[in-house]
Image 1 (cartoon, rainbow, N blue to C red):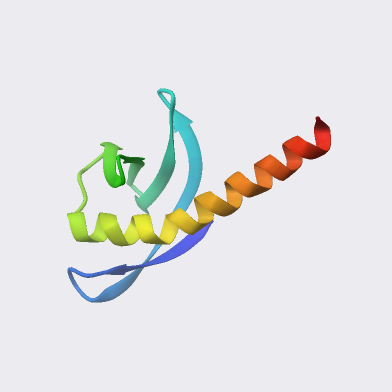
Image 2: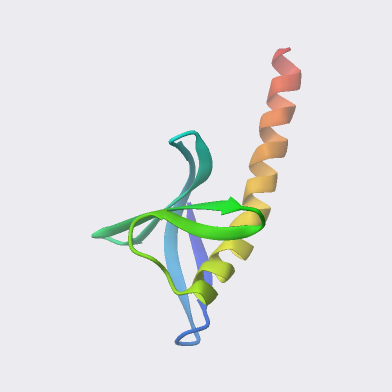
Length: 87
């Protein structure tokens, strides 16, 4: 999916492609930062961190997490609803 994230560093909105994914047993988000660069981020103890790829500015990472958190909730609720239908 395409998301629009505010970049506090340059006060512009950045368009990124993101999808939820599990890597190394961690549920997180795969983010396409630009055509040549991808990162993988996870939320750990309430903080977002880059576990694969080039580190991001902490303020941009926070904004990215704010944008993705509601999407994660919707995906989780949708999966629970599907599980209830099939169980």
